[in-house]
Every structure is written in C-alpha cells, then in structure tokens.
Image (tube, rainbow, N blue to C red):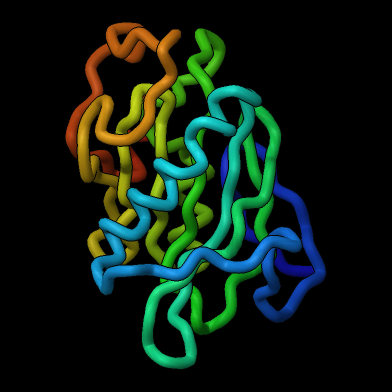
Amino acid sequence: MTYLKIGTVVAAIGLVALVSCTEEPPIIAQTGDIDAFAMRVLDGIQPASIAESREYCGYIYETETGGLAATAPAPGREDYCDLPEPNDSVLASYHTHGSFSDVYDNEVPSVDDVTGDFDARIDGYIGTPAGRVWLVDYDAQIARQLCNTMCITSDPNDDPEEAGFVPQTFTLQELQARFE
C-alpha cells in the first residue's frame, strides 16, 4: 500500500499510477510559472472549499509535451484530503484548508502537510481561509508564504487576527513547536 499525507489524517491507497482524482478533465496551464499556475488553481477552488468547509486537493504535473497541468480537485474532509502516491510526472501537490475555523490553526501548513510533501519528495501549495498561499519547498525543506492574506479568494467570515502571528517561513521543527 502507498499513501501521501495531506491534512491531519493518513489513508492508505493501493494505487501505483497517478490517476485523475475525479472524472473531470485536468486543468491545463496557460503559463510555465508553476507558482502562478498553483495560485490560479487554488483561487479557482477556494469558493467551493470555503462554502463546503472542506479541503480540496490534487496534483500539479508535467505533461508529455513539457507543459503544466493539474488533476481535477478531489474533495476531502474538514481537516484532511487524501491523494494517491504521486508518479514521476508530479511536480507538486495542492490543497485548500477550507473555511475559517476556531478549532484548527488553518492559516499555516500542518505538520502532516509538510511531512507528506517531504516524504513524497515534491513541493506543495496550500490555500488558507484568509487567502494566503503557502509553498512547501522540498529542496529548501521549509514552508514559505508566496503571498499574504487576500492573495486568493478568502472566507468573508475569516478574521486574520485569530491566527495570531504568522511568520513568512516555517521549518518542520518550527511547525512542530507551533502545534505542540
């Protein structure tokens, strides 16, 4: 069995090849800039993620022609989203953190978000309720904000002050300390 952790729950999925997460066609990039493409993908799924108070997730991958594409977003739960193990064409994961919650510290990546991407040896992009976009950078072994609040669609019920101080970067150890 293989798995990738996204959110706070891990599920084992016996898939070897990357398959579309839903029956919808993939999202095709109009740019070669993976950061800009990831932000566009996240912004497109934020309204549903916020309205349904659930995470959505998928993969960004390189097409056979060298372009960028993303799997259709798969719906998750309030605090996690499962993906099959990525294949060699996958460059990054992406997922949202749903709507504002006073139960979860969802303005920052979770420890599972970061370790899941690190274990898969890929980058990850995360959209938060306040509209921040985080990049889990596998090569640098950090999570860093690509943009701050209201960079992408944000939850109108969100109060960014509720998250407290949110630094520009986190190491895995710093995230572990935040969640202890």
